[in-house]
Image (cartoon, rainbow over the protein chains, first blue to last red):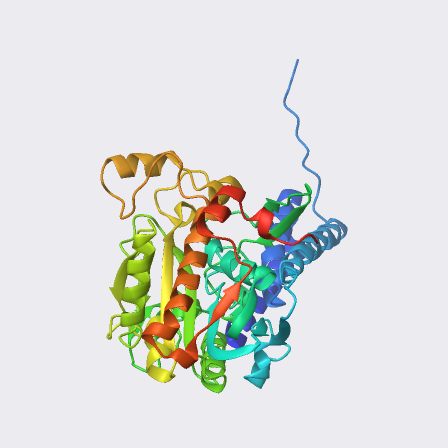
Length: 47
Length: 383
């Protein structure tokens, strides 16, 4: 079950990264970068 | 003068890369803090203690965050064996501070003492979400130096037990509880050898009790002052006579304590499962801790240490609490003194209410009033 949840987090992280690099508005890029932090920590099971 | 200031640069691949590097940097810094929380507080054991790890009794815990120190001291004279378990819930500091004081001060003359101060070691590696509790508490020693101990969470570390089930099913009985109880060590006994991390830890403690043939075992807790089972002993039916004798002795010394029988149909708790699945006499004790209560205001180190809160004064005036309350509150030194005095009182009853050969004698521990007056720092060793 944990692996499935980690897979979901990984998928969302990829989608957020796609938004980050496709986005033309800087402040929306900042928002996407902020969302990366908890997703990266949970994907690596650090928090 | 126009005060409107707009900074609205164009987002490019380069800005995205810079922001990603910044985000990963913040994640790395956060991880350093989280990783530091996984290091256990250092103890300075009294002479005579040997330090072991729980994995010596249940090997699958080795090299995991579930493995935890076990301190053992044998007296010169043979006698009974006792386990003092603190830190089942690392947001209940009187439990583990009692165990820590025993590790740092106890001198066993008869019998054998086992202390596990950080039973739920992984619970010390984080704080309870949405509780705004402090991460640590500090004690001033007589020489002016300080010792700092972590204040943790009731739960096993969330990254070890993620995701939570919607409903937690206690495997030995089929009992169904709220999903968050899957992370609660004191709902997991007798444990499952190949179960979830919580169940494996519970199984390890059961294996320890069985292999060491522990005669008497304490699980030390704290609870909200508005909770009915507080300033109380909860005893299995095999330990209820001993508990009744200890409660009377404590009342005779001016320490009010109530006695509750362990419910037979509420499964997974230490006072039930330790007694059913091993030969030990289990005792769970609770003291009143306002920093856990629902009525509390600002939750900081001062509240944990001093136990004073104006909302609890008001609740006491309205008769809503299950313990006596006044402006002096419930300081941690007093809560710890209650636990420590109760443990020593139980030990003094062993030879009369269990068996003469099971006597246990421990010296070097502070008396109730000494600990209340001196504070905990006076009884800790200097780093």
